[in-house]
Image 1 (tube, rainbow, N blue to C red):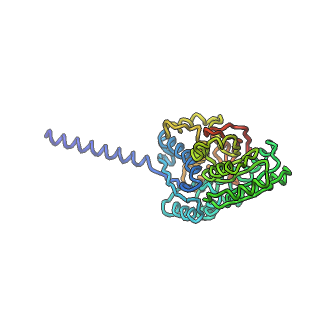
Image 2 (tube, rainbow, N blue to C red):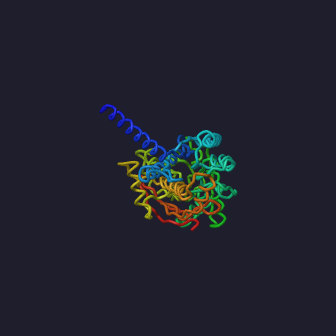
Image 3 (cartoon, rainbow, N blue to C red):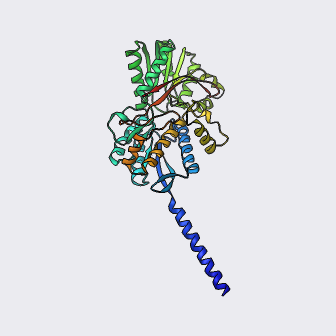
Length: 392
């Protein structure tokens, strides 16, 4: 009798535990977000730094909030990464795979212009929320309903560059740019604004193919024209090589500008004992995690939680990924849905202040955003020389 009672008790306990486990399993599920970024190649230092911000946001939502609440359930976030290698054909293939095979509910990235342009119509056709981190203006100027740009455009950034050049008293510049949609686009906008509006001159222009290592002929050509300043539209590894070769050719213009694709800590590592070459380089458009905001305390907590013991102040690109993911998760939770149209509605209605963005997306898919001017230093630190608001 006693054994029968014991067996019965164990059976009931097992059933209770099974039911309880089943309920827990039902309450916490997984939602997948696709991230299509150049995780290898010349643009990878920037991509890897931005994804730190994404990982910080995911850590915060999964660990501190127990996931995204939709329909009475909690969904833990899983990022699925796709390496586009900054190749449009790979970006297009990964976009299709993310939608059709992996069934992601949203896509974030790419960050480079050529891949972004290859993704655009695929995403619009398949009606999936898309947060681009590219600065190409076509993202918000083509009438797409499912596209949102969590960045400024190259036209806005180049206005900032031209303005800074004039403020520094530079009336003539030489430009060396990577021959991609990104490089050509930035060069074109800079020339149009600097010459057309400020009546200054881009007096020397050289370009190169991505992956180039020999910049001596291009530098020699620009040096010959003797501009007061030089604008290098290049990725971090190439930028370091160009600075070294400029020194070897004894070419030292009054001012040097770089782009927001630069990752200072990687640049300093590339330069090694020649890290002094980065001192004084000016960059317009790098995010700044040290700028005070209502979210900064949470941002620091996320950085320390996800990357304990590391120096979050040396990651200027991370706010891009952090803000984008927070906005996406808030849109999903506010609408109580992962359905594309509902998420897009949430993105246009949720008012939120992040590290470098605030407000909400407008009908074109644009956000108010900060544009910072920085001077870089040989220890990979930066000095903020001023901030302007874009689309206030």
